[in-house]
Image (cartoon, rainbow, N blue to C red; front, side, top):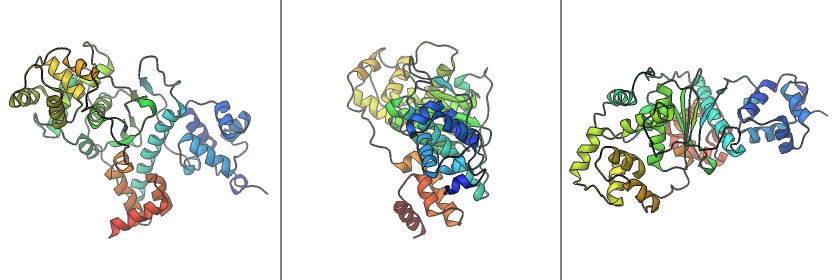
Length: 367
């Protein structure tokens, strides 16, 4: 007796199986070993010469970081070429399988948003400019600040501001902090940014601005480990992205004014830097380097503070699923359910929570 999936010719799309495997840069041999089949089985499934059982399909979905429905219909292609600018000695190929699955999970979230928006007949309008490579990072940061009418003031919630401009933003825990952020401008989903949820808020903010720069400059698909020791001026893409992030979060006029109001010396304490960094939404490290560059504090002070493992530099708690997905994604998912487009099970799958919790969440929103 054949499985129902095996009895229908075209239920499983082989190209989707291959696309999911290619994104993770895994070979048929890698996959075969993981799910205890022959490499030729993987090849045959991808060529639609045979079909996996339901159990095997479930195993593939878990291994690829996908929902099963990803394999049952054509979906927009994920980025075919990812520019990886990571830690020294790292390559995209030698990232762990668990790290690559985070990229697949991100693509799934972007796909889910697109699917739910279509069900709700919503069109997300992207209101972001593009810039030429001749535009300086400072000029771009000033332009974005004008768009948000920020003047020289802090940007307390850049994520919300950018989501309102049509950017999809998610946070997911990245194993071993292998990268800080990932961004691409998808032909269907639009601009998308992923942040490492395990990093402190100030560093996530900086990475968000860094990835925003890649989008504005049209740098393509960028997978980055953001180094906060900014180094010497250069024309490199990562340097430009860091400079834009600095100018966006720490405008010179606002920083000088705040520094003077606080009556800080050239050798401020760790606590004083932490308080100022919190106001501006960045890490102690980013603020310290900016103050050194503006010659407001002693050169090398930031590195000395960081070497002492400051008490204000704590690791964040385990990130909640609400923070990772964002209010906009959760609201869209609930709305899709309320209008009868998706089931409780789909809500649970989208939010990655137990179905009972999904039911409770919907009931809370209805009360």
